[in-house]
Length: 421
Image 1: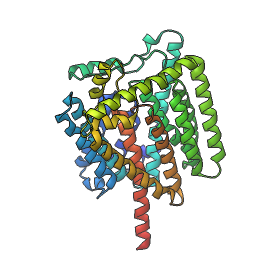
Image 2 (image 1 turned 120 degrees about the vertical axis):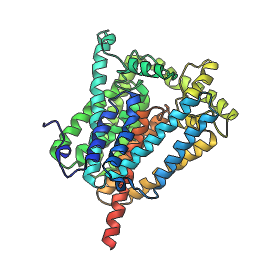
Image 3 (image 1 turned 90 degrees about the vertical axis):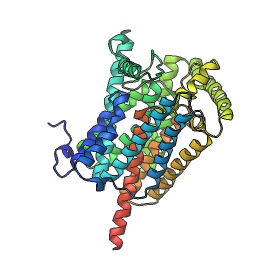
Image 4 (image 1 turned 90 degrees about the horizontal axis):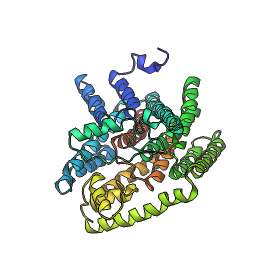
């Protein structure tokens, strides 16, 4: 029973909130197609318990724009080359909007937000343990005994049943844990790593801080075994931002960022070679971006349809055997056209404006804002090298962190309004 967090046994916490926390912990550990179901399960649980008021968020600008963007992605199915893929992406984003709405509504105290953050941290650490085990089996030449990615066969089987075109790259020298490939895995860990580091200093109890320290170490090794230079750069940026969360750990955060990134870079160049790493990370991406811009030019207004599968065919036709353009912003432009890009940009601008509001606040609201800003900073860096919102797990992680940030603002606004009265 000691392994069960205290808040799950506390009757003061709503059942729907406990379901949310457990679901977010399990989300990244499950196959992709099960992850999509999580927000609907939580939403239905709230309705069954006859507490729809808990899901009332009013005219939240972020949720409105996110919902409009999700609907637009679904609409692109009408002109997409593979309509069911675009419709599926729209559904995934609708699920993400529901998930963000649920987080904002149910996380009405600092403690509840902290619990959600620790669930993400624990989930990332559990994935890292799986990744470490995968690396151990690869080191002895028996990767066939422990699948990498873990659910590759299961995902292929399910997608085969629904006749869904599923692009799978065999991973031979890097770990993917429960994710489809190392890039997706690294994106998730990079987003959660600064949150874990933040919890090492700012959580309420010593047990939680010790838990965060252990998880941070595991997450670091998970990132290390993905052997991605982009992840090293993302860590530097995110930890530099995180150093502004408080005066005491500032120097420590900067030092950890530099040391961690140096270790990752040395490991990459030692294992994969400098020239090989440069070729894969630079030359191929430049070619991908140039090719994708040609696709954008021919489909400027509406794009080719949501879902990287609509872009994959075009890249294959031009001799590039990659599933997407390896740049989030170029990919959004190619899939949704200028309309989709503008909607996505508005959503990011709202998030940026909310960051400014949080950073101008005082107390824990400001430090939480900087923690989330550090997470999104690492995400932005990773987005320059990969399509970081192409799978349900990535999109839901993005939605949860954005929802937590909105929840902090909502709590501050509510407290300010009550004090003025």
